[in-house]
Image 1 (tube, rainbow, N blue to C red):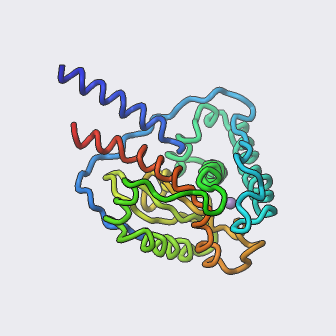
Image 2 (cartoon, rainbow, N blue to C red):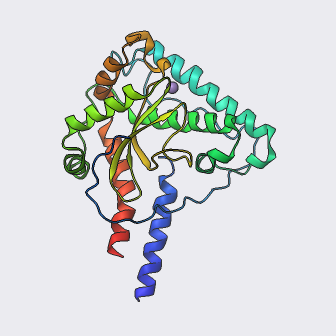
Image 3 (tube, rainbow, N blue to C red):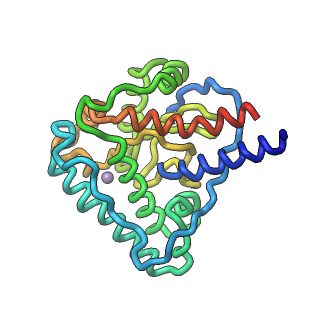
Length: 262
Ligand code: MN
């Protein structure tokens, strides 16, 4: 019976981690458990000349204004993100060894793959994640009770999290991303990565599952904010979809709660 329950739980964990693939200033860890992050198994994708595609936005290009203007959205999604997708398809088409790798596997092995794969697989994943993180200004609600408690316990307060996140975004010299992640021990951390790297990559200084991320490349904000990255980082909170972020938190933390009970 116990073996049966363990087998059931293992199956659930595997399912959750496989579902999760899409989806550093440290917020002090309040969780002592040191469960290792489960390996995300590579998932074979159907072989095709262009396996990756640019999904349409789920809102129109002016939906995030005035926080992010329509022209920025148009260029950012239609040109920049598209360029990452096209370059990734080109890199895969040129190298048979890449043709059975999922996007997830490319991220996890980025350090061993050509830089074109690291940059463009990261660029594709990061931007899909970014579009899904946002919604109309002031429509994104608040963190769920569980996420709010984790933020209060580990970061001090939501305001303190925002300040640390801003520091991470401002501290990223050149281009890159600021992230809120769930680390392998279940704790929250704020981190940043250069270029199109992300915390799922083997090369990341601080690894974890991203639940929130902001693009601090100039192409993300320059038309409205010019050189004032700090103003962009402040304004951006108005378009954060906390429902999405909270759901990602729940998905990231649940397997760790089950592990603790086992
Ligand atoms: Mn970008």
